Structures are given as structure tokens and as C-alpha cells.
Amino acid sequence: MMDTLVSEKPVAARLADPCTLVIFGAAGDLTKRLLIPALYNLVNDGLLPDEFAVIGVARAEMSAEDLRQNLGDALKQFATTKVAAAKAKWLLNRVDYVQGDFGDPGAYQRLKERLARNGGNHLFYLATPPAAFSLVIEGLGEAGMTRDEKNGWRRLIIEKPFGTDLASAKELDRELLRYFDEKQIFRIDHYLGKETVQNIMVMRFANGLFEPIWNRDHIDHVQITVAETVNVESRGGFYDATGALRDMVPNHLFQLLAMTSMGPPNCFGADAVRSEKAKVLDAVRRMTPADVAKNVVRAQYTDGIVNGKPVVAYREAPDVAPHSTAETYVAMRLMIDNWRWAGVPFYLRTGKALAVRKSIIAIKFRQPPIALFRDVPEAIPADNFLVLRIQPDEGVTLEFNAKVPGEDMRIGHVRMDFQYRDYFRASPSTGYETLIYDCMIGDQTLFQRADNVEVGWSVVQPILDAWRRNKGKGLAFYQAGSEGPAEADALLARDGRAWRPLT
Ligand code: BG6
Image (cartoon, rainbow, N blue to C red; front, side, top):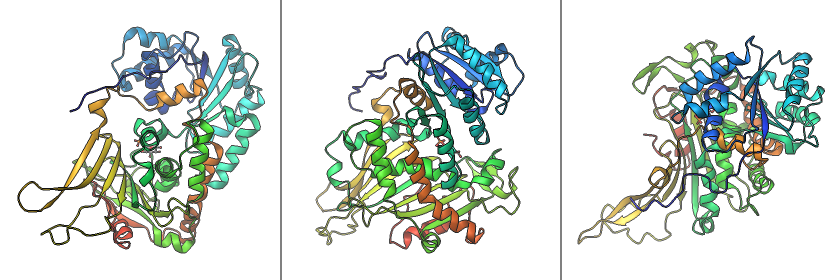
């Protein structure tokens, strides 16, 4: 291993602005599993000021003490680092509770009165099921709680799913903009909280090495894979109405696509970065129904074995319709019609109940123009791949050819590997720390602007339309625990290419 030369903590991190974080859905899963552990990590890093406070809002009848107790238990269960009692106490002592139904104007009045005692800045976090988004936005707006005041800012974090198609995403944006200004809205895509996703930008733009070859002249194609081992579990109700395409593609996979394919922004500013991302997604070719049939694979898992454990077929999972045609896997071939990428296919795939959990971006470079070594026995020059490993086992691999030592000329395929954990002593995190902290300091770079969300949906919409029209015809199947359906292999084979094996 080479020298480790890196600091653990963000160098320039300053204290977050003093604020009261209001969590709608404080009794829910997201709060327990991710928000509280993330807040604890911010306390641990010394990034929250003394004037920080949390107010939970939920329907449940409980006292502030009950909520503190629940969140304390959740912290014990889900913390990503060892919990120090004094720091947990610091955080939990700042938690209060307001009970209320999200549709009840009285709840917002009570919240408003409670917030008036804290004064200062207010950060509203929508950690609720999507059905409640509009209610809360309107409730806050009608209670006059959403406009920046002289003595403090008002900001809103909204979770995915941001709409279920282009029209509903636009509608949600209209509702938000009735009460909030774009500068106050922080649309979360938790993939942007992942260090390795942010690193794509650093790798590309903080090095002189890659950018000159990052284009159609040198790149043959790009593969983006987000493979999961988890199955639908207890989310059947949500998932059956959603499917893999809506759940993963316009948001998480398109983040990876945009980070990989965008042009260099003028600076590392929120609007500069988000404009480049919107621009490249806008250049993705929209599909006709015939393109969809040819370039998109939808599939569903049948029963099988994942990580040594039996998994029942998707259609037999709780709350899933017995003849459901919802896809648990999707693969597609996209073209980006701009100067940099014309003619370079981007292949995307994501699915549940697959053989391994693995998210990677694999960039294949073109072959050298002259087969200089064509007479070398067994010389089949291997592909030059640059592989960005997003999770797990984060790092970067470069694959190339080298001479096998010896008197004769033989060519071997070698790998140069960079592993994050060899160089950086990062403490494990939930990925939400950066996002919550950035919102508290008003930095929108890692959040989706309205046009980013809408352009993502506009690429996916023709696929949704085509599928709706053909009512599940063409749904493929794959065994749980496999690498996905044969149809996805055929999608690349048609172009004379192949997916990188998952295992
Ligand atoms: C969520 C999806 O947004 O992302 C889930 O709703 C999916 O279905 C999850 O499992 C994947 O996130 P991660 O961080 O585990 O890759």
C-alpha cells in the first residue's frame, strides 16, 4: 500500500447555521434508520451549533419524552459509529414533539407557536410517505410559515419519489413554488450523498488525465449497473405501483449517468453544476414506442436463492398482485445526442434480488487502431475498462494489457486498483450527513433543481407510456439470485458487446 496522506475530517467545514429542524414523519422509518444516525454523526463531527433543535411532527399520540426515547433506541440500533452517551444526550435533549394530522390546519398553528419560541431559522424535512407531501406543503404555506423572514431563513427538504411521472412531478413543483422559492427547496436524491458519486466529479475535473479522452473519439460505450440483492420485502404495496424504472432510473441511475457524461461546469457552484447535468440529460434521445420495444428490457424475478437464502417469486410477495406485471429489473440502451457523445451507447441496468449488491460505472475505451500484436500467439488484447466502483468496495480500477514476463511475447490482462479504504480513513456514514449539513449552510449543489427532476422524467416518460399501452406484454423473467434476464444480455449482444459479469 502507498502512503496515506489524507485527513479524516472535512477541512473547511464550518458550524451549520443555528436552526430548528422540523421533521414531518418523525415516527417513521426514515427518521429512525437514517436521519437520527446522520444527525448524531454531525454532532460527533462537531458541526451542529448549540442553538440547534429538532421538532418531530407526526400523527401518533405521544409525548416529547416518548419520541426522545424512541429516537434514542433507534440510534442504538442504527448508528453507524459508536454512540457516546454525552453526545447522544446533547442531541436528544434538543428534541421536542408536536402531535398533529398533516391535513389539520390546527397542527400547523401549534407548530407555528412552538417554533416562535425558538425563533431563527427553520428547516422543514418531509420524511413522510409521498401522499402527504402536498398536504404538508399546503399546511405550512397557508399557515404563513414558508417565507424567509428578517430573522431567519425557511428551507424545505423533500424526499423522493418526486412525482410518479412527468405530469405529477410538474404538478408537485407547481405546488412547491406556490409557497417556496426555488432557492429554499432541497430535493433529495440520496445517491448524491454518496462519497463515491461526488468523487466522479472530482476524478473527472480535478485531474488533467481523463477529460481529454472522455468523449466519442476514445470511449466505445459506458455501462452503469446498480444491482441489489434485496428483494421487495415488505414494500409490496409501494413497489407494485412503482416498479424498478420509476424507483431507480430517473433519480439514482440518472445521477450516475449525468455525473459521468456532463460537461465541465464553469465552477463548483450549485447552479453551474446543476445546469450541466440538466443539459446532458436533455440531450438523451427520447424513445419512440418502437425504440422502447427494442432498447428497453423489463423483467421480474421468479423464486430463487439470494445470499444462500430462499426468496419467493415477486408475485408471491406480500401486497403484490398475483399477476403483477411490475418490473423488478430494467435495462436500457440510451444515446446522448451531443457533440461529446454522439454514437456512444450508454447501457443502464438495475434490479432487485440479484446475485450481488454492486453499483459500478464501467467505461470501455476503444481498441488501438492497429493490431500490432496480431501475430502474437493467443494475443487477444483485453478491453481497456475504467471502472468506477460506487458501492460496496468503493474505488477505481483501470484494466489494460501488459507483457507477460519471459523471452517470448505474450500479452496479459492486468488491473490497477485504487481502494478508498487504503487511502482515506473515512468513518462510516449514512450518506445523509452531507445533505442535511449542506441544506443547513444553504448549499444546493447536491440537490436536484426542478429542471433536473423534470428532464429525468421526460426521458423516462415515453417508456412508461409505451409500457402502459402494451399492458405488460414483453415482460421477461429472471431467477432470484441470478445476474438478470437473458434479454438484457441480448440487448448488448446485438451491438457485439457484453455486460461485465456481476460476480
Ligand atoms: C431507494 C429505492 O431510493 O434506493 C430502493 O426506493 C432502493 O428501492 C434504494 O433499494 C437503493 O439505495 P442504496 O443506497 O442501497 O443503493
